[in-house]
Length: 354
Ligand SMILES: *Cc1c(COP(=O)(O)O)cnc(C)c1O
Image (cartoon, rainbow, N blue to C red; front, side, top):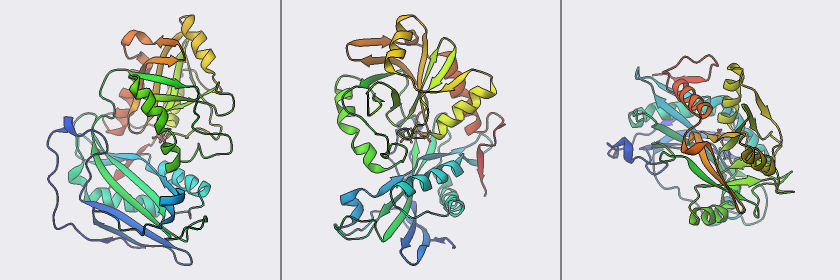
């Protein structure tokens, strides 16, 4: 398949102030589209001017949510090169999500090549101030205009790009432990990046934010006892010098940042365990003074240090308002590798040619 490129005739002004970028608010001049039809497969890959999609109101994904997405970043290095961080992992996960949602598999290598092509076209949009990047949002939706509940016969793969600043505005995050609603259940879609997972989280998030908390920490869907993840991030605890993160059990999104954190910790010979961890265990560790650091890990925020957990009536103040040494070291090393300021012993950096 070749990629057709149709250049925009009316490019937008690029934002000048990297401090005002925010996250996911500004979009570039072009987008990538690839169509799928039953019997024909994926076809008509094209880079076209960014703009609204025209879809029939009966389009199945509006009604039944057959829609998956990914999130990754491109960076401009100090040497002026353009790189992406572990993008093949995102393509692999996209196909895992696709399988769960009855969406046809996409050719991972071709999809990555097409994304790299789009990033090349939009290279002028990649900010280079510290903490900034070009956020890449691929998604696939069912497009058949049909109200019967069934897998769509047609799909569109779309990729949009958004120059972005830091996801959270400094400081330590305050997190609300949700002990009523749940995000995912065994056998459900927790491991897939499907749109519906996020819609179902919003009422808890709104409630937490009304109380001054940034995000919700989810507990398991059966006993509401074991920790799962926080917002759109995986979570890590440092207890008595040991790093602990919930094991991948099918209800948690297998984060690429999570995987990178674990690999880095192991390379530094810092003990790191993937296992079940209950909120009671965290509370006990807090009470005995052994809870040293808590942080979230995900593409958007990279490492997000957590300074407070609220579980029912209990408030846990973590780290005395300071970013812990493991959180800081992980942030520095991950962002260093991502922007080629540090060597890449893991082979995580993907160079966008051109
Ligand atoms: C995307 C996502 C993550 C983080 O995954 P990364 O690959 O590290 O960006 C964690 N949890 C949820 C629910 C997510 O959607």
